[in-house]
Amino acid sequence: MSEPQIVWLRRDLRLTDQAALTSAAQAGPVIPVFILDDETPADRRMGGASRWWLHHALEALQSDLARHHSQLVIRRGNAVEELCKLAGETGAKTVHALRHYEPWWRRAHGKLKDRLDLQLHDGNYLLPPGTVTTGSGTPYKIFTPFKNATFDAIDGFDILPEPSLSSPDSWPDSLSLDDLDLLPTRPDWAGGLRDYWSGLHGTAAAIDRFDEFLEVIAGYSDDRNLPSVDATSRLSPHLHFGEVSPRMLWERIGRHTGQGARMFRAELVWRDYAANLVCQFPDYSEKPYRDGYDENFWRNPNRGHVIEEELQAWQQGRTGYPIVDAGMRQLWATGWMHNRVRMIAASFLVKHLLIDWRHGEEWFWDTLVDADYASNGTNWQWVSGTGVDSNMFVRIMAPLSQSEKFDAAGYIREWVPELADLDEPYIHDPPDHLRGDYAARLIGHREARERALQNYRAHKD
Image 1 (spheres, rainbow, N blue to C red):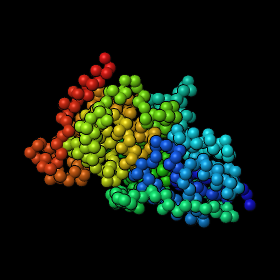
Image 2 (spheres, helix red, strand yellow; image 1 turned 180 degrees about the horizontal axis):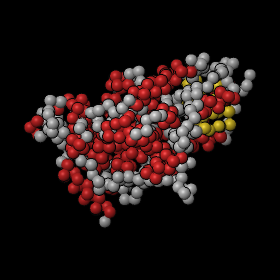
Image 3 (cartoon, one colour; image 1 turned 120 degrees about the horizontal axis):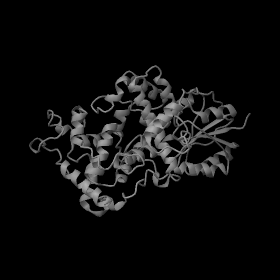
Image 4 (cartoon, rainbow, N blue to C red; image 1 turned 60 degrees about the vertical axis):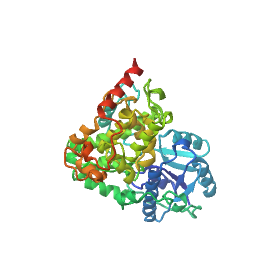
C-alpha cells in the first residue's frame, strides 16, 4: 500500500473544494487530523463562542468522513509537535494543508517544513493573498481598487468535488470530540446559540442556507442594511471554519447577475482584502496602523472605575441606546450580530465612549461564532479611523438616526423587550418618561460627539 498522507485540518472543515484533501487522496491513504492547539496562538486562544461552533463543525465533518469510510483523528497540543508524533506513529512523511495566514500559523508552517514534507495548498480565499497586486507589483492597501482588480482577475472557478478516500491499514489513536471540552458546561451559557443555529452546521447546511439566501439576493444591496429583515446570508461562521469555500459560493450565485449578487461577491472580496492586510501587517488586529492613536488617545478602562463600568454596559447591552443594546444582546445570545448593527455598536464604543477599539475587538473575538483574526481587526480599524483604509474618525455615526434610517424597530422589539410596546419614533430614542426599566443613556449624542471631536483635535494639533 502507498505511504499514508496526513491532511492537517484547521479552518477548512469540508470535503468539497478542499485542495489539500484532494491532493492527499491522489497520493495514498488519507489520515485527516484536527489538532486543538491552544499553545501556538498564545494570546489568540480561540474564544468561547467560536469553540462552541467548532465542536459542531467537527461533528458534521466526522459524519461526512464516515460516508467515505474514513474518520477524523483528533489530537490536542502544539500542532507542529503533534503532527511530527503522528508521522512517527503512522510512517507518513508528508503533511497536506491549506495555507492559513494568521501570524501564528505562518510561524508553524515554517517550523513544520524543517521536519516534514509540508505540502501547502490554496483554498481558504477566492484568490491566494498576495496574488492580486497593483500595476507595479505591490500589494493593495485600499479596498476599492483591490476589489476591482479581484473582480477582473476572477474568470470562474473549477470547484473540486469530494475525493474518494482510502484508509490506512490501521488508524492511530485519537481523542474523542468531547475530550476537547469545546462546549460550555459550568455554566452552560450556549442555550441561545443552540436555538439560533440548530441544525445549521456542516457543508450541507451551509449550502442549504445559501440556496435560501439566493431567493432574496436580488434585494441584498439595500436590504442587507435592514436589521429587522432576514436579508443576509448568515454564512460568516460557515466561511470562517471552512465548512464551505468562498469559491463555492461565488460559483453557486450563477445566473444571478444583478446589483445584489455583485454586492454579495464584494463582501466575499472583503474577506480576501482583510487576509491581504494581515499578510502585509501581521499585527494588524492588535496595533493601529495610523500614528496618533496610542493609549493616550483613548479613555482606557484601566484609568478609572467609571470607564470600566461603561465598557461593561456596552458589553451587556445597557448603554441606553436601543439599536446598540439590541445588537450587543443579540451577540451575547446568538454569537452573531447583524453587520449594520456591528458598525453602529463598534462606532458607539470607539467614538461615543472613546474606549480603545482593541477592547471591542477582544470582546467580539470571544463572543462571535465567526470571530476571524483578519476580518475582525480590519473591521474595527475601519470603524475607529485607525486603519490603512478606514472611515475617518471625525465621521461619527449617530446611532439614533441610523436606527430610524434603517428601520430597526422590529429588531429592537425582539432584543430589547423593555421597549417592545413603544411605537415609532419613540422606540428608536425613548424619552425619559417612556423608558421604564430601560437603561438611561451613558452619554448624550451631542455631548459625545463634541467630546470625541475635541479629543481628536487635541491629539492632532
